[in-house]
Length: 103
Image 1 (cartoon, rainbow, N blue to C red):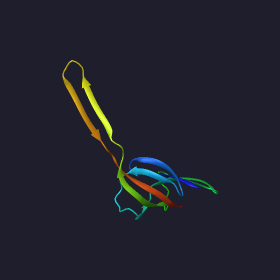
Image 2 (cartoon, rainbow, N blue to C red):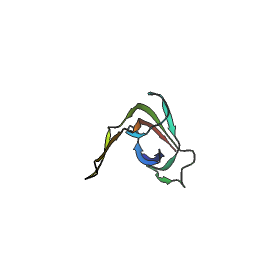
Image 3 (cartoon, helix red, strand yellow):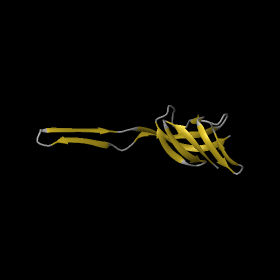
Image 4 (cartoon, rainbow, N blue to C red):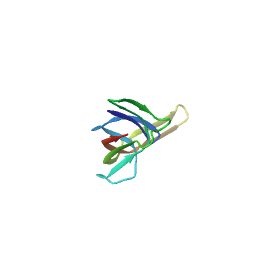
């Protein structure tokens, strides 16, 4: 059984027991959250597809960690102009462990 969920403007395919990193969500480590934007569910009975979401469907997950990705270096260089610009960026994320998929 797996589900396709939407969170943080992105879509993820998840199954029970999976760990995934999503855009930062509010919540403490160890707390359980419910993701209600379920786009599709596939189980033994068949495939259910929402329009755009499935009414009453939810995915329950536990927050494993709130952290930050590796630093992405931004380097801009304009030749013969004596212009160098350097910066970095670290995006926040929340790591989830999928506990239950309910239709």
